[in-house]
Image (cartoon, rainbow, N blue to C red):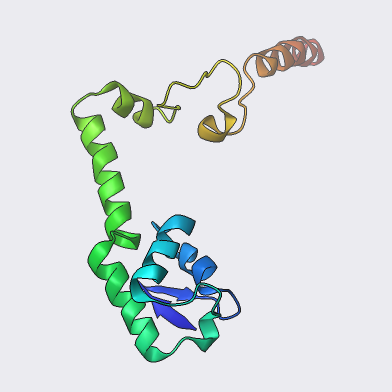
Length: 136
């Protein structure tokens, strides 16, 4: 297994697909990296030499922000928005969509599972008179 940028790449995958397992590198970026280091995209990861792995590692570490650094930068950007009191920061704080999507319906991915309001009250109201009748 080749280890690049702290991520173990699967041996049976093509190099251009395997590089997308690294956080911050997508399909287009992986193709750009492979062109820069002159590796054939259809090559399997298991057939890469140590020299090619070293080239990939150095290219990615010098020219791209990936994995921990990228995650840290994104979280600090969100924290900065919250600290300055920006609208987007307040949406992040309340765990709501912050790019203009509607929230009356949909937005389930961001808001989570539905929390039903009101039906619990009705059930409790019906249960109370029955309990009071038994106690008399």
